[in-house]
Image 1 (cartoon, rainbow, N blue to C red):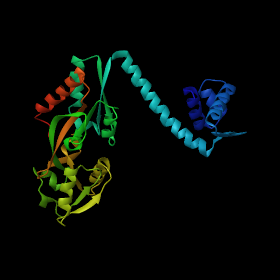
Image 2 (tube, rainbow, N blue to C red):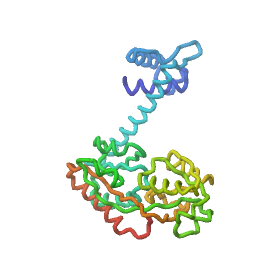
Image 3 (spheres, rainbow, N blue to C red):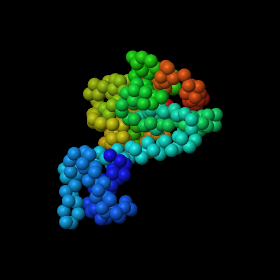
Image 4 (tube, one colour):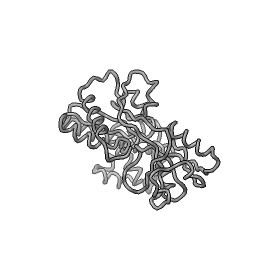
Length: 295
């Protein structure tokens, strides 16, 4: 299977017309039809039903084209990354994190690092789930994580970044937004969004509040859905400070509790590259010097 055949197949799935698809791909119709037939011969099943009016996807073809479209996009991104890398860089440092705001100073660290190591590219990899697995399989070089996630993982180094407390997220016109510190009793009679892959420390606080019997709760599958529910007035939620995007859309008010999060940057113990150590050091210094951004 060639990339040309993949492109032809995807185009035909869009147009369902051999003549139009061939024209769009700048080849003759016989050449186009021949390549589609070669592809079908290779995979062993028909992708299209031919008729006098054009073509129609077979059920197997519809499923296969969906897969091809995703694979083609992945291939396109891989080629673009390779072109960028080969043109300018000699090495790459990839860092996995669930959302961009999790490492607030990442863009600044990348800018500083580029000044001292212009030959090394830093590539953020956003993985809301499975980030730890990707790191353990050596698919990424660095991993933003909570210290509690790293205690039983062999062969890694956990570099402290910052401590993050728990905040209440509410609409900016919510009466709670006027407070400087939220206490348990402030939430009595309110609806609290819970769930969504909350880390253990946050789950402990949520359960403690729910067990008072004074607070309603609503299960929300992930952080983005939770924020949408808060914006819709369905309730409020608690979240780690490192998820704050500082956009000003919501009020983030510190919550009065002992639980917090120790945020670390993990590297592979066998990775002795000077560039990796330098980049980690830059991030650690940025957080050590931080005074304006609540965490």
